[in-house]
Image 1 (cartoon, helix red, strand yellow):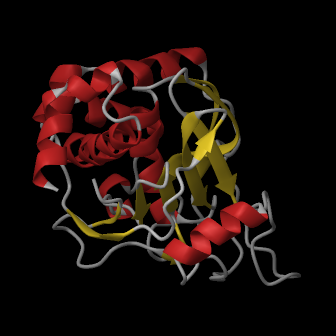
Image 2 (image 1 turned 45 degrees about the vertical axis):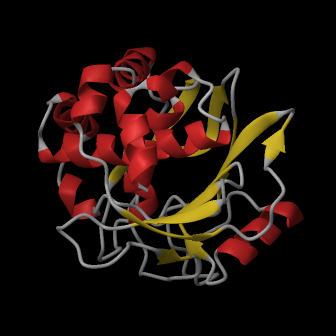
Length: 265
C-alpha cells in the first residue's frame, strides 16, 4: 500500500482548514482557572468509556479529507511500536479541538493515567479560551503504540518576548519530519507512524464555544448531536490512521467504522 499523507478537511460550518502558525502573536491573555489542573480519575474513566463505546463510534459520520504523499519511507517507531507524533501548542484553538478527538482515539489503544485541562489563548479571534486538554506532562501507555507529544508554547502571550513562552522543543529528528511534511511550520501536526500525516483539525472551535468540559463531554456522549458527530467523527479518522500503522492488528481495527473509512479513502 502506498503511504499517504492525509490533510483533514473542515466540516461544513467552516470554509478552510484551521491551521495556525507557530509564531502568530495576539495580545496578552488571561489565565483560565482550569489551565494545567489535573483531570481526575472519574473524568478520565468517562472519556475512556466514550472512546470505547462501539455504538457511538459506529454511528458517527467520518470527516472527509484530502490526500498526498508522505515524504520519506522509513517507518516511525519507538521500541518497535508505531509512533504517533503530535506537535501543537497550548495557545492554538485548532490544536484545542483536535486534542478532543486525538485523546479519544488514543484511548482505543491504551490509556492516559495523567492529563491536564487547558484553554487556548483568551485573545485568539478564531477561538478564544477553547476548552481542551494539554498533552504537556501527560502520561500515556499502550501495548501497541507509542505516543510522543510536543506542546511548543504556553497559551499566555508575553509582551517582553513578543511571543508565547516555550514549553517543549522538537528534537532534530522531529524537526526533519515536520519540515518535510509541513514546510509552512503550521500546527496542529500529527504523524501516524509515517504512514499518514494529518494537518489541521476537522472541528472548528466555534462548535464548543462558551461551553465547559462537563457540557462538552455530555454532548459527545449524546449520540447524533453535532458535537458528538464532529469530535467522534474526527476520533474515528485518527483511529483508522493508527490502525493502518498497525496493519489493522488491534481489536478496534475490526470495527465497521474503521473498515468503512479505510475503504473510502
